Image (cartoon, rainbow, N blue to C red; front, side):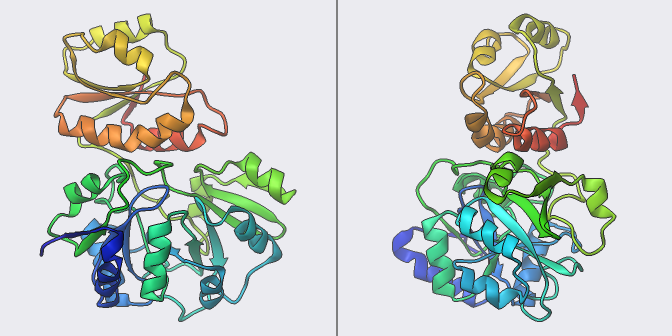
Length: 341
């Protein structure tokens, strides 16, 4: 199969492939999604097969309007409505009660709920409108590997495997990590997966209780669980070492000199500048300026993929100070890491 790249002028061809049951990757503000029509069981099965994704790991459904949400679930609480009105389109996924028969049976991973979001990406919203139906869109990468934030990343994993990729012309997606996933119920909101939208932002807009639900607690709930909590994620083939915050340049220098292994270094500009010429450092990738959490988050997965291709023995990642803004970054880095220093 030839994987075709579609620009805006040929978006209708990408829509035709999706309507024919093929897989087409599409950009969002978070990461690239691997698209299939959400009510086509055979097409959805292709998503799981292409990714090597376990069938009990639910998929997020992407919509282009709130009307499409009403087609997927008959239960939209006032709190869920407020979330949609405030944060959509944007990097927020909302878990709704499932109305049977509205999506293919293999979309929800056996749960009694369905996760839905409206991406903040004009080409993808137009693509969904052209298809006329919501699309599933898990990250367009092989399961367990770093998520894709560029067309090149998708091609690295799926060239010749999927029918097409929609290219919006950006070097990297805007946010760089997956959406915040929330479950509104009983007048409160549970955060099932951290993302760009923080618990504080939710509290400020909703004036309600907002809790960060642990993955262990989610897995004990048979009805509701976020996509992506049950299995290891974001890992390159090399072992990843998370270097905890704070570490001075001198401490970093000592860490690097303690190993004879070749090192890929994923850190801020200051650390990169100081250490890039050490003999152990085979490849570097900057997370951006010092203390720029947004830039670091955007560049994280691209950095992991770049260092993986460099075939160094190990990868060192600079951790950030824990707060609500860095929660998504540290969640992904912790999942990717084999060791903590």
